[in-house]
Image 1 (tube, rainbow, N blue to C red):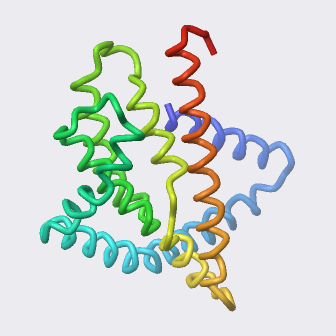
Image 2 (cartoon, one colour; image 1 turned 60 degrees about the vertical axis):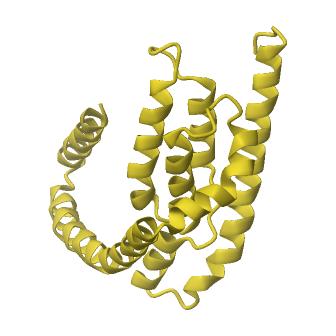
Length: 197
């Protein structure tokens, strides 16, 4: 579906450039933006590879399991219907750890595995369960302590102070996590009491 949307937007851009007579601008934009995209990828790749490697080492050394045990009391409160020894909680912990390091790309595999495990215990296979919805909120609005990708982008574009984004990112993601989980809790309580929300 996303591919169709991109194709549609690109098609509109090409047609508009023909109609307005700006085909030279389109050609120039294609050539320069492709070069900029490649430069950006080459600048981001080492940082993403480094942190993904650190995450893999943490996983292999058992550090992520320790982190999962540390988070276990909190996760039990957030996911009360997920069995205590379910693999989903470990994958959720890994996802949280990767998101805290600002590594959305490294968090994705753990997030997909967590969703797969949550689907196994989902009584209605064609509908997202409450734990799945809660995890989606936690993943989307998760706390970020080190916004690695944003820092890499700021360095790539020669920001005079790339690290000044860290404190605002922590504040924003903590607020979004609290707001998202609070709203999720309120809706869950209303549904449990029989009110349709």
